[in-house]
Structure formats: structure tokens, C-alpha cells
Image (cartoon, rainbow, N blue to C red):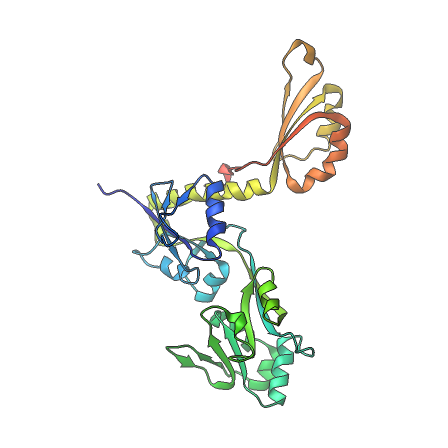
Length: 328
């Protein structure tokens, strides 16, 4: 009987290190034979892994003989219109999709301003982007564009195909380094960014945030119809959810006199209910131990309370908190 495998594709490039660290915290170690290895091994032998560009991944999760699972940005899921199931937002690899113009264009602060400027000057407005679908939607839904050009579609130019009927607006497909294209090849860009530093370094400014994106775990819908694969996907999902949950929580231990126990419990937030036990030993009369999980955001506000009534406070950052009850 052949060994069952879940086929997973993860992103090559800027997201690769983030995903590797995320998996490590989930107890899943990726091992590479070299820096050029596109097929790392995973500590779970039932999962086969291959690296692909994030732009390609959504399209390789459709069909019975394709990958079962993938990690890509939700921006690329939208861009490719891929018919996949979003299993989990990993809350890593966050980027903004932005519209940028040269920083010397002091009077231009929106797409509307740009369209009006180029229309008045009777000049062709040239875009560079990796996001053809998103860019067409962004431009065609703009009210100023509709007033100037009606229902016409901007001219989209790729190495293998050109389409559209508005040659006053041209969108050139970029294969990377989009921010370096202006001002010679194009006038403006639509690109993704985390901090905006590369955009500023290339003498551009962000005038609009079109969308935001995180890395997501996505599934082939055909794979979800297979019982073994579906259960295996749930196993992986709960491990990854455990990392997300743990990143937002703290595990705290403290000793408290019984007379102060109610004062703390009345104000102590907890994931569920704290565990309370009496301390062992003859000299521990009147003392209890509290063991609980709290939200990180609550910790600083608790310090005045704990300083008054608790003793021996210990704080841990958990590696994982597995929400088993959420996986059905």
C-alpha cells in the first residue's frame, strides 16, 4: 500500500523565513540540503513540501492532481481569482498594496489628481504593477476615470498578450523591482510594501492604500473531499493556530495569601478560569498558587494589582496554545 502524503507548497522569497520560523514554533522543522533546495523535508513525514513563488501558489491548488495545501498572500488569492478554500489567516507577512507617484509631484495626492493631470496635458499615463486584476479594478472603479473614459478598459501590456481599448492609460506587467521603473519606463506604480522604505528610497510617495494582505493557509477544495487529507489538514491547522494563539497570550504563575485571593480573582482576566491550589508544606498555611493564561495586552494594567497582593510572579511566553475545541 502506497504511503499517503499531503502535498504542501510554501512561498519562496521574502515570506520564506517567516513561514520557516512559524512552522518551527509549531513543532514542524523545515530542513534544506542547500540554499538552492526547492524541496525541503518537514519533520512530519506525511507532508511533502515544495517551494514556489507566492504569485503562483493559488493556481496550483486547483485540480485533483495539484497541491493539497499552500501558503501565499491573500493578495495573490484575490489577484488570481483562484477557487481555493482559505483555511487560516496566519497573521504574518503583512503588506499594504499601494498606489505610488514620484515624490516630486507635490500637487498629486490621489489617483484622481493623476488622471486629471495627464488628461489635461493629453499625455499617456503609464502604470507598472504585478497586480493586473487589482489595478484594473482600482482604476476602472474610480469616479474620475469613469467621467473621463467611461467603460473603456485600460490597455494592459504583457510579453504574451495585450488587451484593452483605452490607449491613454497603459498598465505594464512587472516581474519585480516595480519601484525602480519610474520615471523612465512608467509614470506611476501599484505595488506591495511592508514599511515603505524601498518606495521612499526610489523617490516615490504613497498616495493611496488600495488593500492589505497577510499570509494565509489555503486548501485545494478537492483535497477537502478526501477524508484522510481533510483530517490531516485539521491537524496542521490546529498546530498553526496554536502559534497564533500563543503569540497573543502570557502564562503567569503567582503565590497569593488566601485573604487576598478574592481581590485578585475579581480583577484577573483569564483564558478560561485560573487554576488555584494550596501550597504544600507546613509553613505554607494561608498561601495559594494561581496559574492562568492572560492576554498580553492586559499584563501591564495588572501590574499595580499584582504588586500589591501577589508574591513570586513568574511570566512565560507559551510556544503554543492549541485551541482543540475549535477544530471540529
